Image (cartoon, rainbow over all chains, first blue to last red; front, side, top):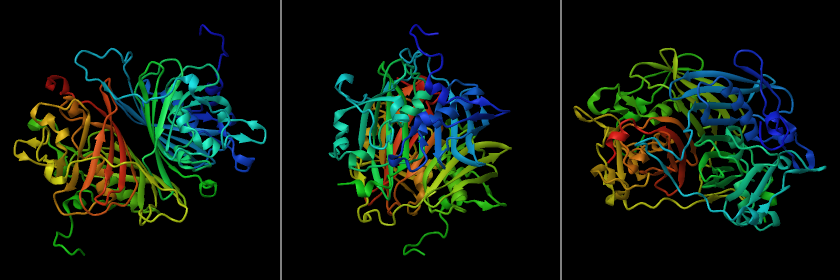
Length: 294
Length: 294
C-alpha cells in the first residue's frame, strides 16, 4: 500500500505475528531472527524481550475496544524457547475510556512472560489539543545529529560464531558517542545510553515497534563497565503518542544499582519531536560483569 | 516490641490487614480511614490506591519465598467500595532469585485492582556492597529542610463536610514551598511535587508504606493548574532498599500531558539518604480541571 517498494510483510511483522487458535488464544513462535546471540553460542538464544511483548500486544489488540496500548506491564519469568507457544488473553474490564487485559505467553505449560495491558485512545493529532485541554511536555533528550552518531553494528553479546546475527542484524542503532566508550574498554562511568533506533528494513514505527524501542539500546550498566546479558525482570511502558515515520530517538538512564538489581528509564521520541513512549525496567546485572570489569 | 509507647497495631496495619480464607485467598476490607474524601461528598469515597496495593502485597508476601516486592505493577480498573472484598493470589513462578505472582482484588465478582508482583531479596546492608559488586546511585532530590516545608494538612479534595478526614488525616506531608503555589491559586507552571512523607501515627516505613509513598503527594498536574481527583490508571513501582526509620523524601515529576493522560515519576528516599523506591504511573487529568483552571 506504500509509495515505496518494500516486501508485503516486514520481517518484524512476521516475527511478531499471532494466529487465532480459539477464544482468547493465539499461536505464536519466538523468532530467532530477533534473538540475542550469546557469546560462544552456549546458551539457547533469547529472543529480545520487546519483540515478545510486541507479539503479545498483537494478541491483546486483536480484541481490544480501544486502539492504543497506553500502559503495558511485563514480568519476565522464563526464557521463551524457539518453538511454538501460545498467548492467552483474558479481558478484565472493557470500559469507555480504558480496557484492561491480562496476557500470558505459555510454553511447556508454564508462563514464560506475563503481561497486563491497559488500552485507550491517544489523540489523533497531538499537535492540536482540544479547546481548554491541558497539554505539557518536558524537554527532549539532547543528541548529536544522526550522521555524527556511532553505527553500533554488532556489539558485545550480539555476535555468534557466524558473525552478526539475530537482533543486532535487524536493528539500526546510531549511538551518541558520549555513551559508547565501553566498546573500547573506556566506559563513561555514567549509566546512560542514547541513540537513534529503527529497523534495518523499511518499516515505520507503531505501537509494536515502540514496545521494542523502550528496551532497544545496550544495557545502561555497560556505561559502568558491566558486561554480558542483563536480563529484564520487569518492564512497564506507556504509549504517549502515535509515532511519526522516521527513526526514533531513545534515551535511557539508570538511577540505582545495588544487590545485583538495576533500573533503566527510557524515553522514546519520534522524528516529529514528540514523546511517543516512556518505559522503566528492573533488570539483573549480567553474571559476567565482575570478571569483565577493569 | 519498641522502645517508644505506641498502640499494638497501627491504623495503617489495621487498614491493610488480610485474613486467610483458603488457598491463595484472603479477605480484606477497603478502609474509609484512608479514603480520599470527595468535595461535596457526592461520589463514594475512593480509598487511596497505594493503600490498596499495600493490602494486596501483604497477601502476596504471605506465601512468597522472597521477602521484598522488588517490582509491583498495578492496573486500576474499578473503584473499590468500602465493603468486604477478596484478594486472590496465583504464583506463576517461584525461582531462586525471583518469584512472580498475580493478585486480583475481587469485589462483586469483578476485578477492581489487578496486580503483578515479582519478589526478590534486597541487600541487608546496602551500604556494604559485596566484594566486586557493582553499585551506583544518582543524585538525590533537593528539598529545603523539613522545618521550612509547608505542612499540607487538608488540601483541595481531601476535606468533607465534617472537615479533614480520610487519607489526609492519616498522613503527614511537608511540601517544598516551590511546589505548593496551587494552594493559593498560583500554580508554579511545572508539574512536580516534592515533600517529606510519613504517617501521623508513629510507624516506621517498610515495603507496605513505600507502596503508599510512591503515590503519596498531590497530583503533579496541580502544578499546571489542574484540580480535582486524578485517577491512576496504572502504577508500577520498584523497591530498591529496605527503608531506614524516619520520614521519607518523595519527589515526583511529570514528562507529558496529552489527551487527558499524564505520567508521574516518583522517587522515594529514606532518612538515611538511600533510594528506597521508584514509581511511575499513568493517570487521567481530573474531570474538573478545565473549569478550575485560570
